[in-house]
Amino acid sequence: MSTVNKNGKKEIKKVVLAYSGGLDTSVILKWLQDEYQCEIVTFTADLGQGEELEPARAKAKAAGVKEQDIYIDDVREEFVRDFVFPMFRANTV
Image (cartoon, rainbow, N blue to C red; front, top):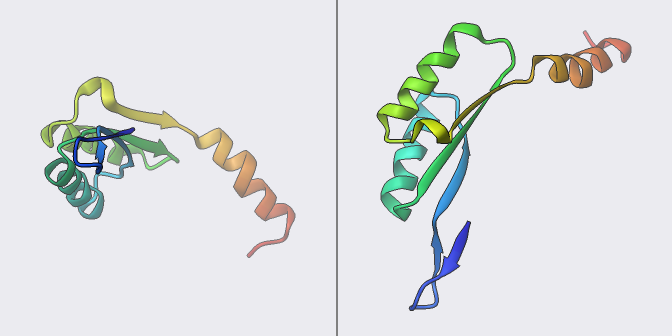
């Protein structure tokens, strides 16, 4: 989401970040906050990684992301249906 400020530059207000909680996405989260002074919405896809999900939520909160802007969605069924099964049908090794 962005608008144009009085200098004619785009002003970014909100960014959705595919967030794993790892070093790279945590660094870019902080950089976006510092560089653009924008709100961050994090999205983490649960593909079955289990214990890594709650630490990702905690890291996002520690970085200043509001609880209501932290999304962790269970996409295991879709992942298996749309990617894993088609690989098996194609005899992927």
